Image 1: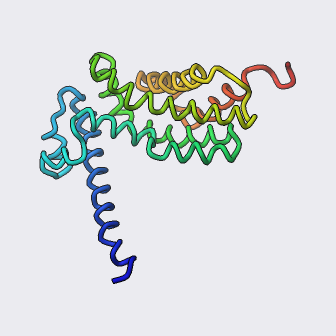
Image 2 (image 1 turned 30 degrees about the horizontal axis):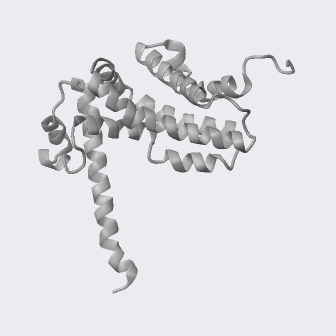
Image 3 (image 1 turned 180 degrees about the horizontal axis):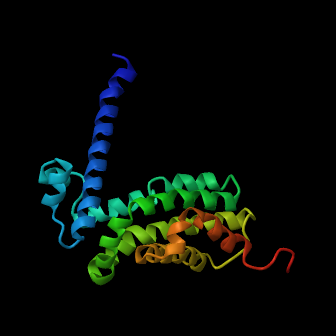
Length: 211
């Protein structure tokens, strides 16, 4: 049997596993959006995903694990390290706009779920700590590494790296909150947000030619 033939069953199993995981996450996002994180149950999610309750625990250890999985999908967390490495080879501003454009689309599609989940994160101390450590801090750490590398390459001037990363993150969080609140200019011009953010971050607000 050839090497490719031997590897084919493993690849198929991995593909089927990934497809089932995606189906579970889609179901969890829908249930969280309909019922809220606190009221949702694993059984609700399993029924919508058309799997046994126990199957979910083969992929996620808890509702919180599902929440992190959903947020990681929205942020494309698995792709982020590779994207940041690739971004070091190109223009920092262009890479910034591209990354935000992709994630803005996911945020728009996942708004209903975010609206249901974020209040639970804010009021539940244990969930808040875990959410910060397993999701927010992971992204912060990756972005800090990227920004330091850009500074070393001379593509970006020296700045306070931890605070700069958090300023950018806070802008994104603020945009999500304003969108959930129904801000009309933000919703109607959502597609323009990445370019405007890039202007603020890279160009500032001074008129052209001013020192």
